Image 1 (cartoon, rainbow, N blue to C red):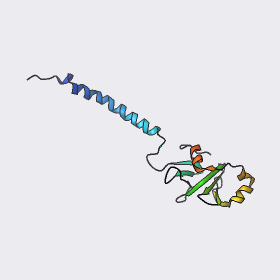
Image 2: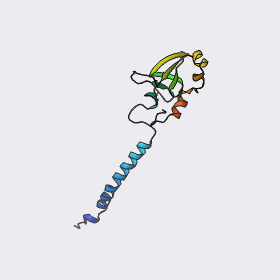
Image 3: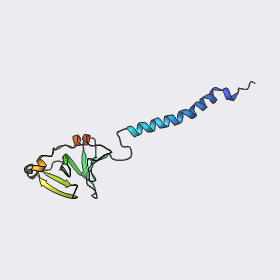
Length: 142
């Protein structure tokens, strides 16, 4: 019976090639996962400022505004901001939640009050979905 030299067998050569291929494949997959826009380790949220975050909830087109040190969040339709103020309107509400990030204040105003105030008139309100697209996942606005 002929004995095959293991040094030059196909299996031995392929095994040595795999030793070099595995780390390269691992690094390729790792880079691909890190470059994805998806957050694989938890719910996705983006900070506006002062710890206030816009968070995707219950589907691709529903968003909540979360405030530091409060449980849960407010499901919102519209939002607008200009330092230091954040205006957000809850789903189907006639009132706006106003967060002053400089003073850590949270008040509620009517739509009429918001429209009569010159400062809040100058803040552009947009749908939560549009605002989500404008926010950076890794950087707050101010």
